[in-house]
Image (cartoon, rainbow, N blue to C red; front, side):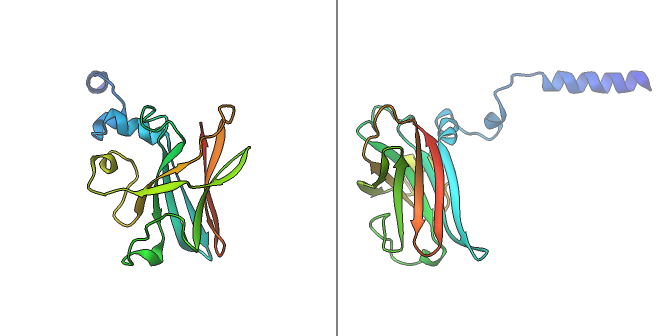
Amino acid sequence: MFKTILFIFALFIAGCSGKNDGMLSYLNIDEQTEKALNYTKSAQIVNSLELRAKITATYLNPLYPNKYKDGEYFFVGVYIPGDYGKPKPDDINRTDYRLVLKSKDGNSSALGAEIVDKKSHFFKNMPHTDNWSRYYVVNFKELKPKVYNMSLILISEEYGTAQMDFVK
């Protein structure tokens, strides 16, 4: 009996001692997507136990330093429950919600927002995407080099805020 248990344990250890690339290798996630996960945050605005907005943001500057270098860039997905099925707004800043970047230098509004095509290769490599959110690449003014911490905040005057903290 002891020999049988020892043999099964030895087989188990031998089966587990193969090449270990981490859990992400089993999920078929490429290196770029794995790196993007490290720079992705999510937050929600909940009011009266109801989801009012969900935001997911990926800080793009460390992922694509040659492309995004003249400001602070984020890949942002926003889901607002009442918006699904309505015509898409052209800008992420609306009358009822707005996006700001907060640092020790103060708050800044988005300089621009480009709608991301959900069929694009760029979209497919971004983590935490879904069919219901609207996606943008949003840019803000470049923060001074000595600024290390920043917060991306979705603000609703009616329901509150959702904040995600990033390290530059």
